Amino acid sequence: MREDIRAVEDKALSAWPALQQMTHGGWLLRQSRGYTKRSNSVQPLWTEPGADLRGMVGYCEDAYHRAGLPTIFKITPLCEPCGLDGRLDEYGYALTDRSQVLIRSLEEQLAVPSADGLRVDAVLTEEWLAAASAILPLKPGQRETASAMLADSSLRRGFFLLSSGDMPVAIGLGVVDDGYLGLFDIATSPAHRNRGHAERLARHILSWGQAHGAHSSYLQVVDGNVPAQRLYAKLGYARLYDYWYRMRWP
Image (cartoon, rainbow, N blue to C red; front, side, top):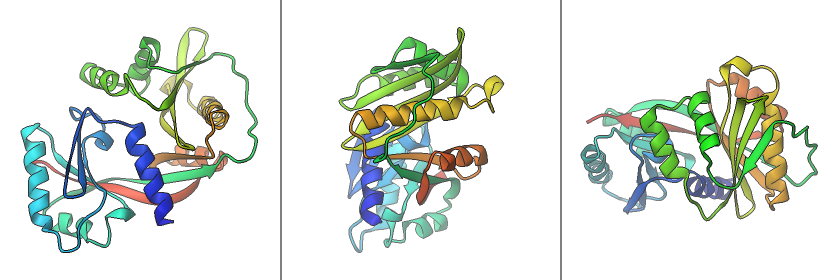
């Protein structure tokens, strides 16, 4: 299971980029003007036995303080057995956004729903960004950062936009990397929820990923998002591991 976790973590880091990143003692420091914890946190990829954790944490704190950001650590099963989570608790870091990583196989042929109202683009478009800004929603500064983060990639990507007439009702992003399909930003307009739009969109992303060589699919969902968890269980996803963030302001 540990190798499965490492594979998904590696793919997710590439699929959801950061504007800036640097390494320090096996830790990856990512910064993107504060937009999403995923792109503004320390990813402890590995830690040397006997490492000076207090010194390493202090280094990270200085880096994020200079950027005007809180210091955030992503805690996964890969962080152990160094005991980082417990040490961060001692240092006053609050636990937040406990989440699950789900995975499913794409080995079997998938049923594909109607494509009416569906648009798929290989690159970020103004139409997708405008829909994302309205549905998620995004503030002007967040929209600018999202545009910069998602503008270019060497990975195969699909920007999915589902509309009813001229009204965007759901969005999603699929990223294929070496057989793994990641699903990101699956969201439905509040006025159009509970009508099956998210399921329809997700099924199209899964079929698209399968057509582009993906054998497995992963996604992340917050613990408290029960409707999303029900949807993904219906789509055949199962829990692989949990992660959470430890955060502290200067």
